[in-house]
Image 1 (cartoon, rainbow, N blue to C red):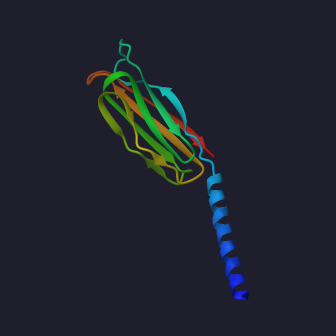
Image 2 (cartoon, rainbow, N blue to C red; image 1 turned 120 degrees about the horizontal axis):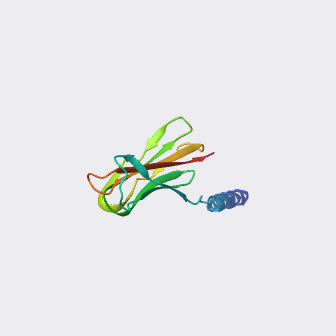
Image 3 (tube, rainbow, N blue to C red; image 1 turned 180 degrees about the horizontal axis):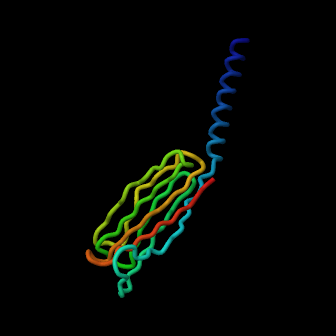
Length: 143
């Protein structure tokens, strides 16, 4: 009878530990992603007279981020890239995502390896193969 009571007490304690772990895990909040944008400017070539424009948007939280480059209309080329600087310890990159004959490109997602980090989004676009290259970058830091 004594062994049965000890066994039952151990089972109850085990169930309580599992229940507490589940409650603690579900109480963790997920940080929402935030977006910031920068208007692209001509970086190479003569500024066109057309109504073409472009923006680069960084969408990030303290744990991950990605870049989106958006042109005001279908463009010859649109590309986006996102880097994360992990508190000076390392820099991870999504690499360039390039799209042709469209108005938008979204990079892959990069994940931070440290709590203190800086995400930088890069965007480039060209209205035609011979027109001016537009580009911009925007950064956000977390600590």
